[in-house]
Image 1 (spheres, one colour):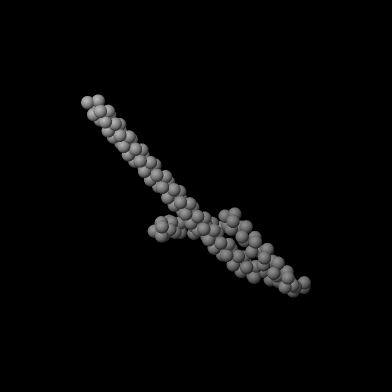
Image 2 (tube, one colour; image 1 turned 135 degrees about the vertical axis):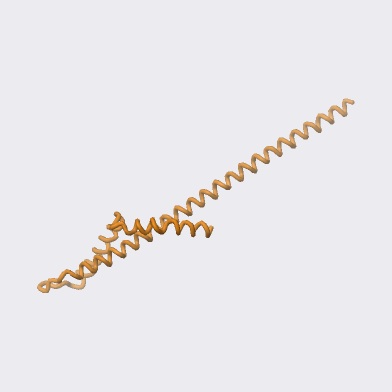
Length: 133
């Protein structure tokens, strides 16, 4: 009888250990799934942010090009002084200076064209990025 009691105790103890291991495995599996979900959401957030930054840069670049073209047209309406004339080097310098001036103007907000484009294109670009993932 004692042998049966001891063996019954071992079986019940063995069952407890088995159940405990199964519960621990389930907890581990849940923790693993949660960690994977967090990693995927973090990766998605990073991709979304990268897409937003690229779109912002593209919109700012478009505004820069628009301002540069507008500034060149405005400069072409001003008559040149025939008395002193302009050397080729001076013309290149003025173009480079004007380009950098327009880049800094667009980076500082410009005329709002870049922000308007960004606000209009952001939902479409983000929706397209989500479908590609």
